Length: 366
Image 1 (cartoon, helix red, strand yellow):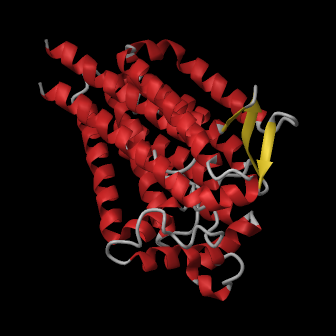
Image 2 (cartoon, helix red, strand yellow; image 1 turned 135 degrees about the horizontal axis):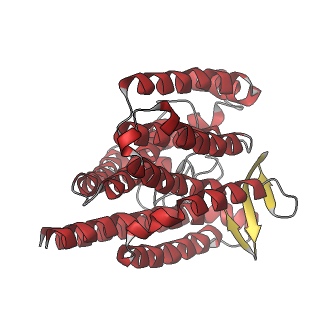
């Protein structure tokens, strides 16, 4: 009975987040969509398409035996790497704001890095569960580190440091959850920590973003503009907000209001109370997913559900931290909420896999 209740509760929460996200995407983008594309529903149509496909994937994958994914772990890696390489192919890869992060195939736009995150989780879950007996050996870790490193390298040259960090965090989390030694944990954590300042230093725009984070008012019309507008948006919301569709910052003041900074618009329209309720909803969802991982019938299911829960958690934390000026700006979407068809599809598909782990737990208990 509890399994069935959790199944429907997770489905309800995810669908509720996705529908709320679609409403907020429209609210945040209607003016800019009409201004730039002559259609106020431009982003809403794309988001709705992603939600519909994502919901179908969630339902199908909830009935698909996740154990079969083990056979295709290398196929997921190969497809992900191929898609990441396609962003650099003229005529297929598309560039926006100096970054090559999207591909266009048969009239459909995809962001390969969003697919790579979940492909990496599936691969790591399968590999680590298969080699658990030798997980403390460094030789065993060469393969997963190499796969994750290759994906990170392809993403960082797009460039997208935020997704690279997400991939690195997920890899480190899953290695620790998989049972690596304390020595290896310290080594990998230290290497990752040292890589961050190096990656920032080699790209001038990242240094500018860092300085803008430290003091956005030093460049109010430059690198600090977005953060300042985000704080204006959150501050003007007060306790209960200015009301749905009544945001003022969406009138071309706040860049990327429908995507990376949609939480700012939520804060403006629903206030601090609305933001807290949204964060509590994410906490509820992540808690339910962690319970699935802890009660999974096998190690593969535990790592799979745990990895997906971690992606949702880390992206939610980083997105909100950026919007509130708690960390330097990055380009990670808010799961299920931000505009982005590939993102919402992959997150809903990931939830489908978690639901299947929950189903398998029920079968194992019978």
